[in-house]
Image 1: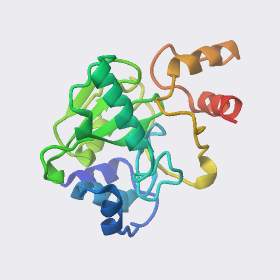
Image 2 (image 1 turned 30 degrees about the vertical axis):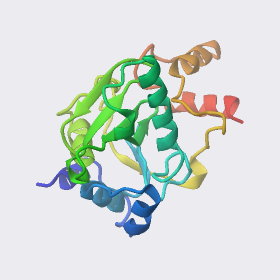
Image 3 (image 1 turned 120 degrees about the horizontal axis):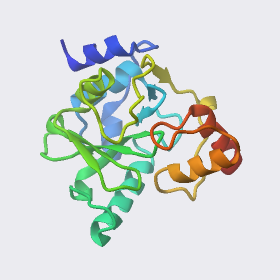
Image 4 (image 1 turned 180 degrees about the vertical axis):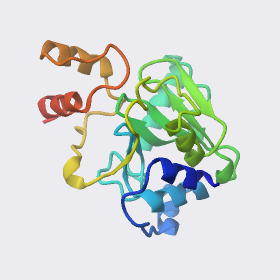
Length: 223
């Protein structure tokens, strides 16, 4: 059984496979892409796993979830600053990291773009405003399949991630609210939690922030 088959059994794709001009995408990025990612992107399209994890996509509905948008470059610049100044330990050269996804809590998923063969790239996850990193010795599709099946546990992900059945939700432009142009870093979850408690919302001290809280925060603070 392939990793993609395992993933589709866990999270059935809601739409038929889509066609993507990979030659154009790779030309825009200036690098080749892993085959597993191409199959994943074609099979699922843009969207979110478990209402928590977004994988950047060539057809992302905003620039903030688009594979060829500005986010990977911005994240790399922040990592470079941390790497050079020693703010947080970055275990890899930032020039070898390419952001490929993000969580609601502000973590990013990265390809470790060495060796040169993209099909040998591994996956890393950072901690939002923290020192921890997690490395998965496999490709992105295998990472998703093992994490969403409970076989792999990422310390930065919430403990209750799999408490409810995990699915895939396709993205639509009307469902996404872009970040303000001045926002370049990960989401400040501590600020969101403090704001939520001050406004009567019940939020856990750690783990996943409820979707209704995030929606209220975005409506109040990003308009």
